[in-house]
Length: 131
Image (cartoon, rainbow, N blue to C red; front, top):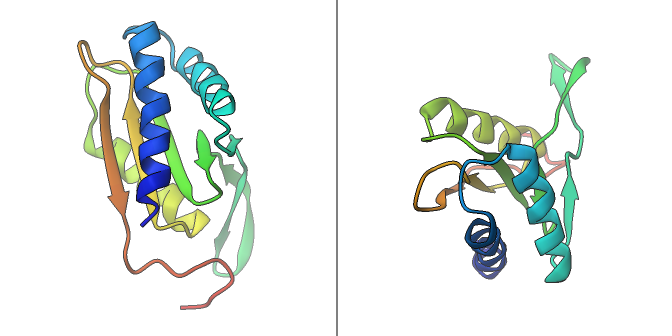
């Protein structure tokens, strides 16, 4: 599911990590990845606002995943020493609310390597479809 698109996303992410290394602020990686995606012609939306409902009532609070790539892959960026379960939960929430079955968690803050995880939620209902 969106494997080719994921490979293209990861190629751009590895290029950013190779150019900048680790230890910079998350926003530096965000902006750099946006530039790299643009240079490669990869469509994305940055900080797209997702609405949240509780019992069919719209909440004032919105979620804003770092990136949505190819209108289908939710991407959450981190710049920390190591990923934790809370970061995975954050991405799963974004995926669930956006009703997108594929997500990537990218951590530029780990020394020596770009840390990343790909997630697929197989029981995701496409936008507009009730469950």
